[in-house]
Length: 272
Image (tube, rainbow, N blue to C red; front, side, top):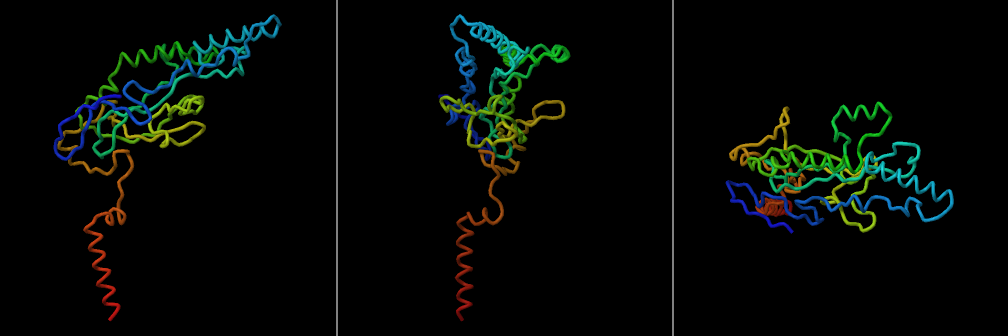
């Protein structure tokens, strides 16, 4: 479990941590517990077995093709592997940064673990498409994308160690794996934080979170301390809007007492 680092309170803001803390579902600073190797099909699942028949030989050859495509493409590159259930491996999810938005909501950062196919740049991606090949979304290109993201930690670091007074925007993005799972089908272990807040949309799950706002140049938008404190705290920490109108008014003890007294006075007038 991660230890929260206390941050001195300034003004009316509530700040308890500058690092992601372990969520109830187990999503912490090191990310989702998703393991690509556990989600890859095994030889028996592909119908591969030791035997001397021609069918056994064909299945073995198809199995080799399957793993080559899984490593390189994340999809079938020839008719040999069509229909074998090839798919990009990985999981997308939100990670809590530990910062608080100016509107009162917790700020999150979106982690894209499903390969996008751009490990070697847009020109190679276009060339593969022109050749009739699938995008490079296999395990090997996915590792290169992860390395590239790891060597450029600016987005996450900006979220973690910015001014500490971020302005946020709300985004709804896909979470889970390529097949629409947000938990391990075998063990039920969740791969995302707060899976109960994910909703089904177009065959996959999506989540709505508050993330670091950016300007038109892609730079993070941060506020001064005074601006952050003065901003209306319209949302709860979980990102839901605070109650407004009658429900909010009636939740105040003084209001309830006042309404009660007025009701008694009105009842007394009616009784006359």
